[in-house]
Length: 215
Ligand code: AMP
Image 1 (spheres, rainbow, N blue to C red):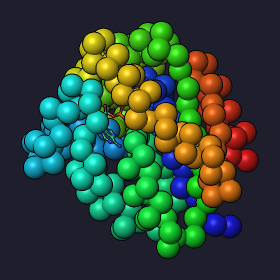
Image 2 (image 1 turned 135 degrees about the vertical axis):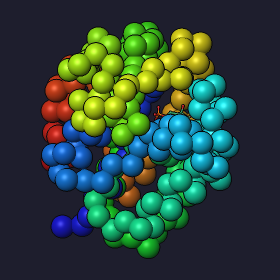
Image 3 (image 1 turned 60 degrees about the vertical axis):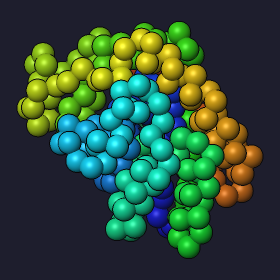
């Protein structure tokens, strides 16, 4: 069987990070969350973190050259099955991924997790994240112990981009920049296997739909 790459695309708050973690555990995949990598770089004050910080906090896309370094440094070292969570987010990034895939014999699943703008608003406020990449939500996915990561026991942080104005901006950017990527994949279904998943369901139901979609 060809090795798989799962590309998770979704509105802010759609739960793609949570679903990526479930997929990772189920199939023993590598999970690359571009947002988590950036948040880690920012908290560790690395060069990339300093370059990306203002964009992430404002809810804007980090420039493609920085993202490209972050993503391909890791992909080039990896021959296992992987999940790309949060990449590509615009057409230029989709073309970069195409180029990378030219020489790779992989099956590509594009999974779009969809939420309306109103549903996004409810999901985005109350989000917490941990440096290790785990994501929580005050109401929808609370940690066992308040403010502490279930996995690594570190203190959870309120995401710097969870402010409502920033979240609305992220939604607008999603509509403008990322929707064309979805269309691109939808129209290229000979090359990619594309499925749309309804995000406004319980975490377990979304995951069931993902499993059905990739069967
Ligand atoms: P996420 O955790 O996927 O919601 O991403 C959080 C933030 O990281 C986004 O709002 C962007 O500022 C930045 N980011 C993540 N992935 C990308 C990407 N592929 N291109 C540009 N910026 C990104």
